[in-house]
Image (cartoon, rainbow over all chains, first blue to last red; front, side, top):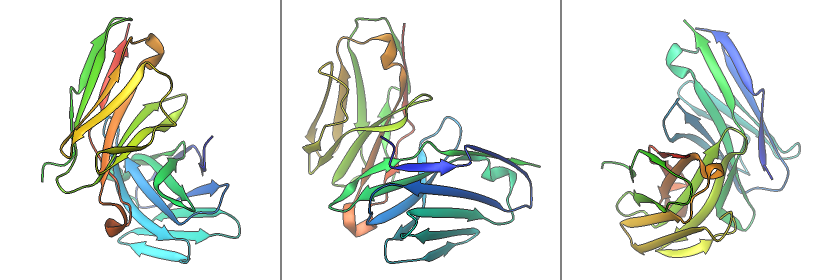
Length: 112
Length: 115
């Protein structure tokens, strides 16, 4: 079963706007990661947030984690056409650091 | 570093044939993962290795699937006999484990079509 589930499944915005994607999960975690997948390519790691962190930034990316709600959000600010991709959250499980479960992804389209 | 290398990039085969997918992880990485991605089921972990030893193969769909890692620089995923429902993109990924925060580096994938 899916540990992480992203919402929305698809998102279309204009270039320059912000994009927010959400991830919900079911069991306690050690870390939560976000990955990007361009069409026809493998996944690329974007950012990791640990269970004791609440917010993390990397360039135009901002990730938040609310362990009480078992949810995370990924914000991409000032989006660009090159941000068009699918975005996945990946969660491990306490006691199982290496085995991560990927959600179904959010397909983001940024219109120039 | 060239990153994770997978071969072939595309494979078209007939039902019943044996298929072997290959992966070369990033040098120095001690974890290797095999995933399968389909529209219906998303990205599924099939098996992962640590220091060439299979740790968790609970995601392997059935006995037709087998994976090996004879050394730190090579792994194979074999399907015998193949079936049309095995059609998917198969990804290999590697990681350093806790020293890198568990970040996984993915290969470009092998698109398998079984007719």
